[in-house]
Image 1 (tube, helix red, strand yellow):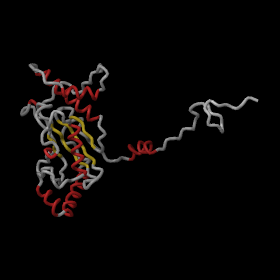
Image 2 (cartoon, helix red, strand yellow):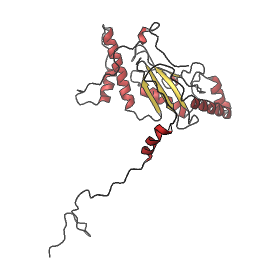
Image 3 (cartoon, helix red, strand yellow):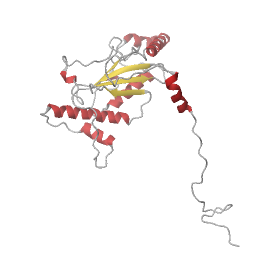
Image 4 (tube, helix red, strand yellow):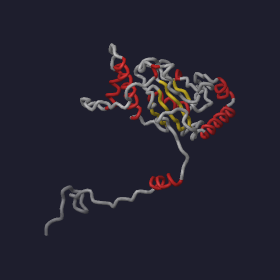
Length: 267
């Protein structure tokens, strides 16, 4: 697929309203912003008569999810909500180990229109991947392998963690939606590995492609330019000067003695 674009005429519910850049409240009665995020998502759904309030509450829930995501130590994966539609998140996975190692794969996460209700968010890969859990035509990930039922306690960061998991280790018992990949994985691993390596190479050729959507939050990359990046690279690789060893305090032990608060005898 070539990306997700807003279509106000077809789907007004996906149209972004209000400002996504709302801050979590400062007065949290001692709670951290992370714990406040969890409370905001788990709070009971009140009767809502105002469309504006409904949109505000939904975007606050989404902001809370993103706040929790930022607190997780997820390696090699970058995700950010769209600037135009907070129900769509852009992501890029840099695979660091396993059979897909070296691949750079783009994906979109689409939240349900009635989020945080509505079931599991949909994950669609924009970069083609030969994988048992990824539908070859649409690029949609079969999330039911990890989330047979999306519960209210589930978080988006757990879904993103699942993306890293399925690209790091391929399980032969996965609920396949790409039967060719599943069959090769089970019966001819050499050919399966060759197909995977091919899609890894193709993913690298697409890294610098122009954005498929007009969104300032779309994650882009540019080739290395010596005139621009050399000075930054040099600064990063420059070893820091070792600080001179300085006394951190006074010793109250006489040299040659183990007795605390000792001092030389007065002569």
